[in-house]
Image 1 (tube, rainbow, N blue to C red):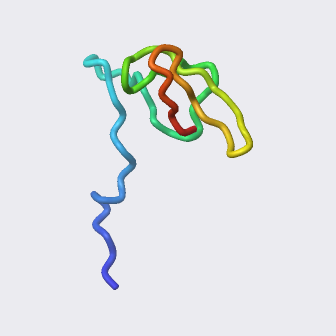
Image 2 (cartoon, rainbow, N blue to C red):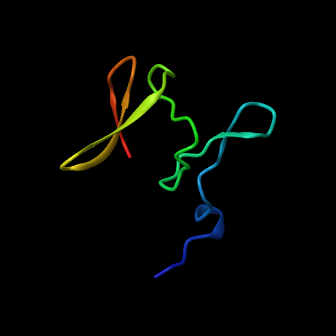
Length: 67
């Protein structure tokens, strides 16, 4: 079995705002103090809970995003 090159095992790149400052970190451990933005329309996401688990819902287009 061959090992993967280390270049393929890096973490995903951070999205930036053009000034080399991270603006969005798509990780599970994100801070609750941060603002969560809808990928479809850029409005605020609200955190919801149901029996299946936690998810995020857009306040504008009502799309659901997994936690």
